[in-house]
Length: 240
Ligand SMILES: [Zn+2]
Image (tube, rainbow, N blue to C red):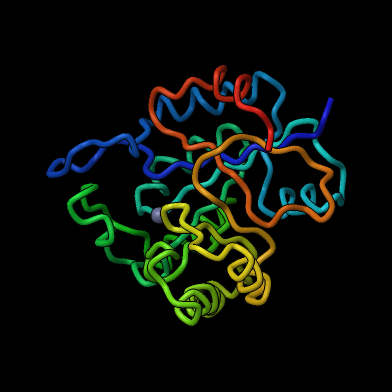
């Protein structure tokens, strides 16, 4: 059996605020739990960020099927809604934070998604303590297509520096806001490596097989939300 990694990409777990509205980016806690159970029952191993990076680079013992659970935008509600479910499955996770919005709201989604509180540094530290590794989602949550090479460099470096300053840790993973890596993939790859990231995640796509040398820098993620059909997503989509 090939060694396969899957990365799940969630946004919000639980219900929307009373004054907000629901979108596909809200996954209820029961459904979130059922989705994790789907993976557990089919022999997928839940990986931490370091285990994922080791597996990607051919170090350590490779799982037959490993899955990384990620959350974009670092909503405050993850602590109350996602962490207890993760703990029940002994599953680690990764949260991608847009550092300019820490302790604020998702103003970058104005008019598209309801405003929700984004975690402050204390909550992010609590998530990290609970096994959800804090990684970079840039500073301003702008797609790279709209940025100059200098702005891209700043998004990569300043967000990493903010995480280092406030949590005392080195961020090795980056998730592109909107999955948008910009127009010049080669240049962006160079900027990501130069800033010291080991991987950069897209939004959407399927699983990928381990063993490619060198390991790919840009990785697909399964877009997760209510009603996804995991049987179809994982059986019908080819590995990339
Ligand atoms: Zn985002």
